[in-house]
Image (tube, rainbow, N blue to C red; front, top):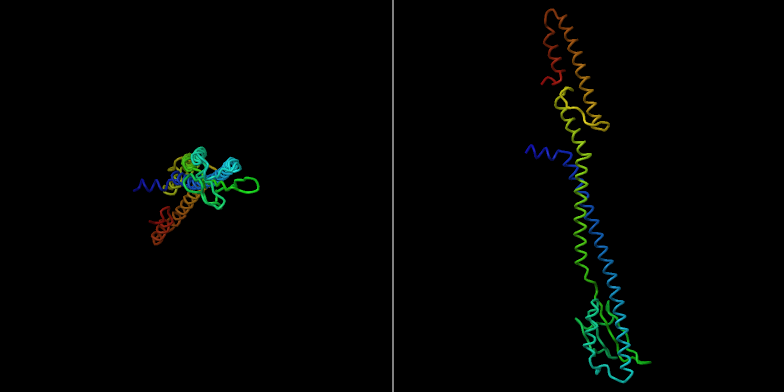
Length: 265
């Protein structure tokens, strides 16, 4: 119990724990905020890239299907369209669906997870032009967000490990540097308060700060107290020398005892 209490009172442990806790808390919050901002910016960039790819693919397919429509071939009867659309979808990892719609909005060909719904976020709709009219539409759906969780999770863990390492380093430097000097002076002050005589103290380590000023003031006060007590004893001796009948001895000795270093205890 005494060792545990001494550890809690040790300024090296207390300062080191305080520095470690503050730096770890602030650093972890900053790292989490930074990773969150990177995640948001990365998601926006991935969404913009997917939108651009979807527009490019939709424009290319609309031009190809438009040439067939201008030759009079119905879009619903074009051979090999679904396999071709599926091959395009497999080459573009940021796309999740491609559909060819008729002029009435009915799906003529569709590949992907689900038929894209025109007007929703991440869906591009391009008309299949055959001159002044439109033979249908190509609708391409892009993924809402890119799969960045793995790399961002790794970045978060690396950031936390870096914060932990820096916090431990800073806490160790604070404990072995300023906190060690403060602890040495704290122990010197406690020894000064508990022992009293100046010659019972260990030599002072360092000076010029607040604790050293306290030690100097305690030493000066101790010297003044001992000088005052010596003067009181000398004056009491003079009074006792003139006390021929001895009726002043008891009160004089009581006063000297109460004014002593122990306060009469």
